[in-house]
Length: 161
Image 1 (cartoon, rainbow, N blue to C red):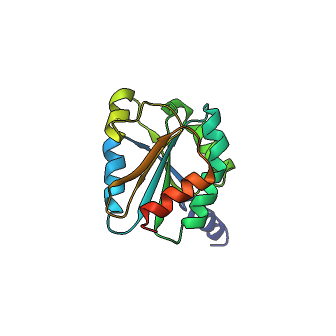
Image 2 (spheres, rainbow, N blue to C red; image 1 turned 135 degrees about the vertical axis):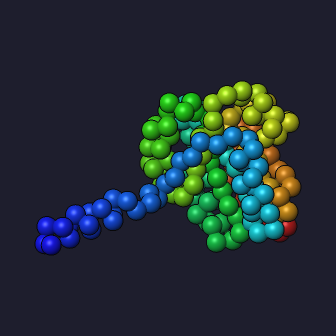
């Protein structure tokens, strides 16, 4: 029994959920996630890639905003547009930036179709950020890196403040 107890304890702790969960996602999945927050939360989704310099530059600021607004009915999700064979690099990048919870990597397939189903005016440029208000409607969106003030103004507008 003395030899079994440590194995049970190790088994329990090794099976616990990781702080970071990276899931492959398509455009339909993204819309379902947004819909799951309708009536409750503002949702900000940031599309980025590990090879995208402006994405990397603004990433820590978005993580800070995620922490700041986490208890204020604002949910921030990150969607990597890296190829799925870069999953380990994406996970390491997210961990290095202190991201916990659910994050996503875009399923491989028709990129143009994915982009158009996310938002018709998205050209595919990265980073791309889209914000949905509490009713699930697009409140704001933009391509390229923006300032923290820009993000916060858009979040507050989506919250109706």
